[in-house]
Image 1 (cartoon, rainbow, N blue to C red):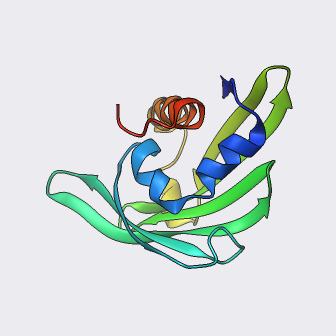
Image 2: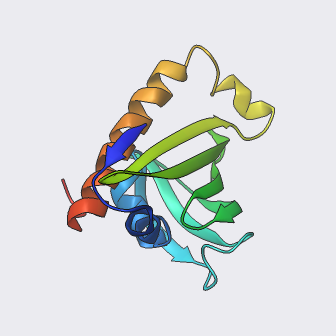
Length: 143
């Protein structure tokens, strides 16, 4: 979780831009394409994730949306796994409280996303939220 100094609508505008995910999601390399109706339920953007020569092409799909309060995604990076990611935006005095939770998106992915890997996923999500905060507050996309 993190505190942002901008309103939920500003954060949600970044979440609604599929190109931004390559800049704020740790491990995302590039966005290859996006459905024209993103972020409608069922819409997808197509990405490349990983590092070095270990990059895979897959997609992320909107499962639920309640602008500007909540976005639930299914992020796929097979064969590494599938995650269900929930981002909740709550207005606060002077900005927005943002929480992001990530759980295994299917039974096989529970091998990769479990209690043993929770600290790594938590660290990754803390850094992703730091990047999302920077983009939301400043419009700056690169570190």
